[in-house]
Image (cartoon, rainbow, N blue to C red):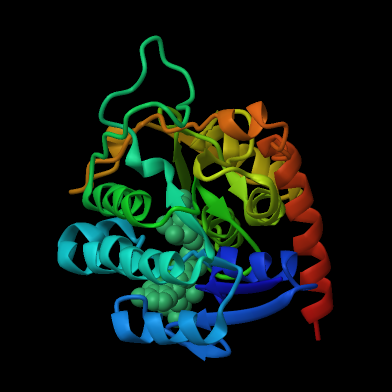
Length: 299
Ligand SMILES: NC(=O)c1ccc[n+]([C@@H]2O[C@H](COP(=O)([O-])OP(=O)(O)OC[C@H]3O[C@@H](n4cnc5c(N)ncnc54)[C@H](OP(=O)(O)O)[C@@H]3O)[C@@H](O)[C@H]2O)c1
C-alpha cells in the first residue's frame, strides 16, 4: 500500500508515519520532510498526487493556532478549506482514499440538550474562524471526493512538537510552567476529550483500512475539564505542584471558544472499529513514552 502523509513532521504526522511505517510511505510538509508541499499550491498538489499515485492520502496540514486564524482569516480558509479542496480533488482524480483530519471546534455554537458528547450527526456550529474554516474544508471534501474519511479529533498532545502552535501542547506547557516554578491556573468550566496522538495514529490506520466513507470522530474516550487534565498530568509525571482552579471568564481572549466539545466516537463504535483508549489511560501511555524518549536523548 502506498501512503502519502501531508504534514508528516507535525505532532500527529510523526506518529502517523510510525503507524504506517511498514507501507511505502511518502512524507510531505511545508518544510522538513522528504517532499516539500504547500497544500495551497494547486498545481503542486496535483503533480505530487498524480506522480506518486498513493492508495491513501492523509492530510493533517492545517492553520490551527486559533488566535492567529482569527486575525488572518484568509490564510486560515486558504489552508483549511481551499488547500483541503485541492487535496480532495487530486484524490478524486486518482482514486486515492483521502483521510482528512478535522476538529472538535466545528462544534460549540449549538450544544446538544441535555448536554452530551457530540456525535457525527450533530450539526456543526463553529464559534470562531478556525472552526469555520475547518468546517468549510469538510464540506468541500464531501462534495468532491467519493472515497473520503473526515476524522474529527480533539485537544491533541504528542511527543513531537505541535508545529502550528510554536511547539507547544497542553501537557508540555503544564510541565514547563511547573519546572519554571510559575503559578498554574487552569479552567474548571471548559470540558474536552484530551487525545494522545499515539492512540489516535493507531485508530487512524484502522479507519483508513476498514471504515466506509464518511465523517468519524476519533478522540480518547471520557470527558474532563482542563483542570482535571492538568492535575492528572502532574500525577502521572510525579511532579509536585499546585494547580489553582480558574474560570474561562478569568482569561481575556478576543476569540470565542466552546466550553464543551467532547466527542463521541459513535460511528467507529457502531462499525466495531473504535480502539481509542480512555483519556487517562492514554495519558499514562504518553508519560511512559515521554520518560523513554527523555532517557534516550539524555547526554
Ligand atoms: N493540535 C490540536 O490540539 C488539534 C485538535 C483537533 C484537531 N487538530 C487537527 O489535527 C491536525 C494535526 O494537528 P497537529 O497538532 O499535528 O499540528 P502541527 O504539529 O502543527 O502539524 C501540522 C503539519 O501541517 C503542516 N502544514 C501546515 N500548513 C501546511 C501547508 N499549507 N501545506 C502543507 N503542510 C502544511 C505543518 O508543516 P510545517 O511544520 O512545515 O509548517 C505541520 O507539519 C490539524 O489538521 C488540526 O486541525 C489539532
